[in-house]
Image (cartoon, rainbow, N blue to C red):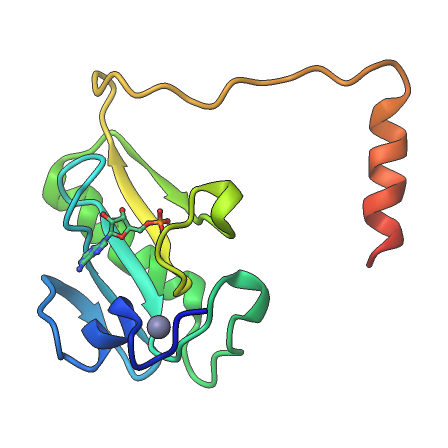
Amino acid sequence: MVSEKDCIFCKIVRAEIPCSKIYEDNEFLAFLDIRPINKGHTLVVPKLHCKNLLDFPKAEETDLIEFIKKVANAVVKATKADGFNLGMNNGRASGQVIPHAHFHIIPRFSDDGLRHWPNREYEKGEIDKVQKKIVSFL
Ligand code: AMP
Ligand code: ZN
């Protein structure tokens, strides 16, 4: 487990290592991803260390969706993007490499050549079983 002391995004929040800051408030920070999927790819992180969405701190003041909308709007305008993806990897199996929760705002272009994830099919009746199982954990 990575401690706050060693966590790279905590170090960015504490300004111990540099970042290309886009926006911040008391609880969240947005900065450019250093290895962007497309240029302008921006990360939004809570300033409090947490590893993923499931242990995300409850924001005291910030309306997180409004924060993300504000940043995404600026990213899209600045890059003249045709759209954007809002993504979040949670856990190593999902592709999360940095264990400090973060949202990806990725500007997208009609001709950027990136492909979406492939879709799968349910077996007959399977979708009802999956639905009931998920609901049973709520
Ligand atoms: P994830 O795979 O969801 O954990 O994404 C981690 C992201 O953090 C990757 O897209 C990296 O390019 C990005 N990243 C890693 N180190 C830094 C850094 N020092 N500053 C900005 N972005 C970083
Ligand atoms: Zn951290």
